[in-house]
Every structure is written in structure tokens, then in C-alpha cells.
Length: 178
Image (cartoon, rainbow, N blue to C red; front, side, top):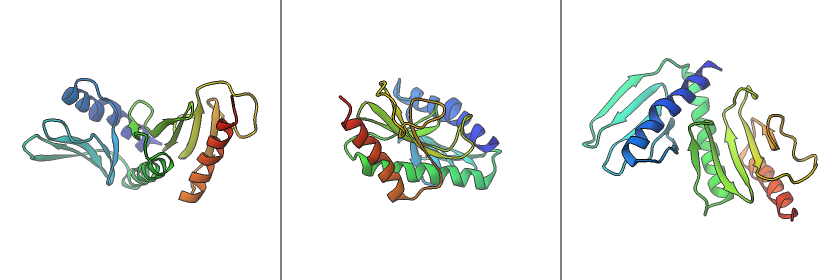
């Protein structure tokens, strides 16, 4: 999907570097209404993608909008996926930080010797999907069905209950592994 690739590029090459410049080392982003962006900078300001606009807010609050050449519907769908992911992962593990990682362009948490996340799609998946990527080899099990990595995946679309059930099954299975 061209829009996903372009938004991924903007996250990795524009938005995240703006956060690094403001913080010295932080790259992680967050889901934002209508898209994604940086958390507020320590000295004020932020950079975000809102729909089909790149929004830069200076420390003094002055906002500048720049159009992005992406399909509006695709941008809206990615924003919905990220918002869904943020909410579900926050409910799954309220004590864990949730991040939108620009290099993978997914929303994820680290929990139980694994990464739990939601991707809007990638080179191996045309559509969004939920995943649990294992850090260790836990042996064969039909639950670990991922095609491009060691772990489990569940194709989109899913509702909140199905997402939490999927992540819960993975957590329970990992709890049973030494």
C-alpha cells in the first residue's frame, strides 16, 4: 500500500527525527487523533501527522500545516488501527508503556518475554494484523502461527474483545513456558 509506505517513511524520516532533535535520544511516537506524532516536546511544540497533513507546532504554539500526498481513506484507516492498538494494549497492560515505533511503524508493548503489537501492515502482510513476537524459542505450538517471524498473528479486522482474547491466549501460553 503506497499510503502506508509513505506514512511509514514520514514517521521514520521526519516525525521521529524531530523528537530526537528535541529530546536528544527518544525516537518513539504515539497514536494521536487522526494519525500519529510525537509527545509534546520538553520545551513545547510537537510534530504530528493528522489525516493528510504534516503538522508542526513550534514552542510558542504557532502551528504550520503541510499537505502529504497520501490517500485520505488509507490515512484514516491507519489512524483507526493505531488508535485501536493504543487502547487495546493499554487495557492489556496498563502498567507498561505503549509506543508507536517509527522503524517498524507499529504500536507495541514489551511483556512476558515477548512484544505484543498491532501493525497496519508491512511487506509480508497487505492488511493490518495483531501479533505477539517471541523473544525466545518456546517450542512448537499451533498458536505460534506467524509467517514472517517467530510468534503469533491474527489478521484484521478484529474487535476489542477478540484482540484481548488473542493477546490473553498468548500470555497464558507464555506463562506455561518455563
